[in-house]
Image 1 (tube, rainbow, N blue to C red):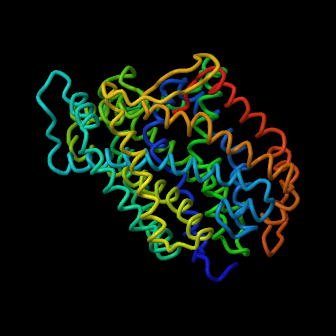
Image 2: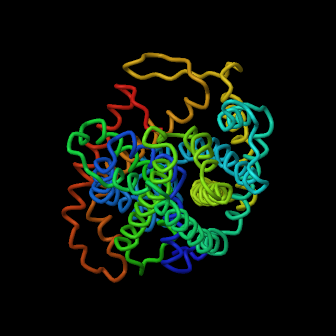
Amino acid sequence: MNSKRGQWASNLGFILAAAGSAVGLGNIWKFPGKIAAYGGGAFLLLYVLIVALIGLPVMLAELSIGRATQKNVVGAFHSLNRRWTFCGALGVITLFVILSYYCIVGGWVMKYVFVYLTGAHFPATAAPFQDFFVQFISAPVQPLLWGALFLGACIFVVVRGVSSGIEKFSKFLMPCLFLLLISIMLRAVTLPNAWEGVKYLFEIRPEAINGDTLVAALGQAFFSLSVGMGIMVTYGSYVPKKENLLRSAVMICFLDTLVAILAGLAIVPVVFATMGAEGLGMGGGFAFMALPEVFAMMPGGVLFGLAFFLLLFLAALTSAISILESCTAFLNEELHWSRLKSTLLLAVPMSLFSIGYSLSQNADRGLNLPWLDWKHGLQWLPMNAVMEKFTDNLMIPLGALLFCVFVGWIWGTSKAAKEIRGEAQKPFKLEKFWSFIVRYVAPVVILIILYFTLIQGQGLS
């Protein structure tokens, strides 16, 4: 390990930091909504199987690249095969765009934490929660200020380095996240009629297992695990050679899936208890409009709402930190800039994309960009929608596909497996199965995702 580079001080720190990267907004608000949209237990079953059979092998492939080279995602590919340097560059571009809008959404979450801290006073209108959210995100300045505050929190952690910054804060933030989530879940399942929601969450209805449910589970798994972007390459580069990568990857996937399931148990029963099944929904509208309405109908709803948005903030922050770290490591190592200089100079161009993403929430401003898919042809969509489609529908699955092709056919699964075994060269009993997944199964699965996103125009956001 290069002594000048950061390194995880403990394997627990690495697992918590990587799990924090995987545990993001998608686990907290997308997962319960997708459970509702795609048949409850049927979606949950397919999701868990995909994480175990596809997500885990792809994550292992990325971690092996990082530890083998001990470099950032661009430097890693350049070191192993210069012709594939572009693959690392695509990862950095993807992360840059994601963080440009992720910090704006993180700012929304911080705003709602403030709202609930100050008593959750929503306007006295016919649709108070919807009106409040729409007016807030449509404002020209306020969302940008909250987004800048969120990005500042990320910079504060990342400039402190790997062990003193990211690992130290992850060891604090992730236990807080679990404590909050478990507390909310325990309160949720004790509400009247809440067990109807629990039953819906786990009941498997065979008719719900279909192509749409499979594609939704595939997309959620890849987005949730932070694969296909290079984050795990960067985080893997800080892992000491003595550590067991397989065991670590299993723990990361387990914790990420556990959070998603606990989030379902925390949210779905509450919605069933207050609004019934028809109250479930997906996306930001669900988190920022539907759930505040649910909290307002509950005893102690202000405290419940505060706990939920604090939970959402922790999930967003840990993910955003990993994204910023991966971009910072590239500038720090390839251009030899300091961490502070790297993060601050990233913030300058990123702010332009953030401004466009925020201002385009109001369609009347006409901030549109072109987007092309086979089914709908060339469309001019709001900039925020195009940014999300660019990352979620194209770049993340494309990145995962390229990583699999590289490990499976260019670098070689035998070399990657040697890195997975580490210094101790402990037996990797599933090596042949893992190699088969990475070389054949995962690429086919990812191509299916790309077919539905780029040919059929199906969104994964």
